Image 1 (cartoon, rainbow, N blue to C red):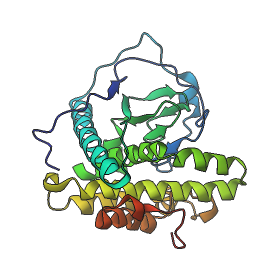
Image 2 (cartoon, helix red, strand yellow):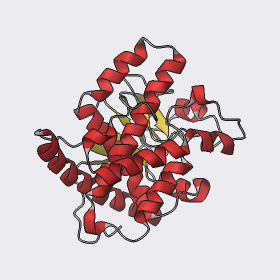
Image 3 (cartoon, helix red, strand yellow):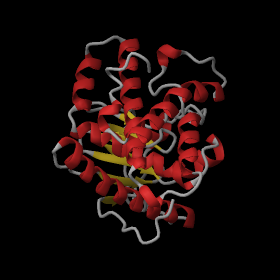
Length: 276
């Protein structure tokens, strides 16, 4: 992805150098939407979340983390411009962009605490997306999702959840999930996540000359590598569709491609689709 000369977004909150006690658990307020649950990690992150980090603790950042932060800020800037244009042209509305919180290790949000093993997430309660900058390295080294556009897809996916929040979709889904059983709630979340994949594809369609050969293939591969069925197999489990919360590898890649090919927000109606 060609980002040289692209501005860095000002909507960045960098928490990486300061500590912060993270509350255990996720989803404390409203609906928390996470890119990829830590199936691949094979660890229980609860003790880490309960322990937290001392408020006075500071840490140095690696060059890799700094590059990831700079990259994320520039990708975020492209989402701000593209979604502002699409809201105006396709919806006749204005777009209010999210803040991207960069953290390292653990952090807290109104939706609860999280660690790097949780994966990036969006909290509608404070309208912020959260990203551990080490996640890009995890994607490449542990999940096989390599390439800069795979990383850009991660940022775009969390911004897509903010787009859903702007459109009132997150609130509607949250209400429906509260009265559904576990399987029904999971099924609704799958449709929500696949819609975010589709909206990420819409964003990719309008990135234009910033794309390099192979970029779309990197995003599609990343979508496949974080499908529920693939992650459960990596963890040594037999895939259990009733537990899926993000969709299969095939579904995630196909809905991203749907958004990319159409360039239309309206093409991402996963809730009305008979075939996911």
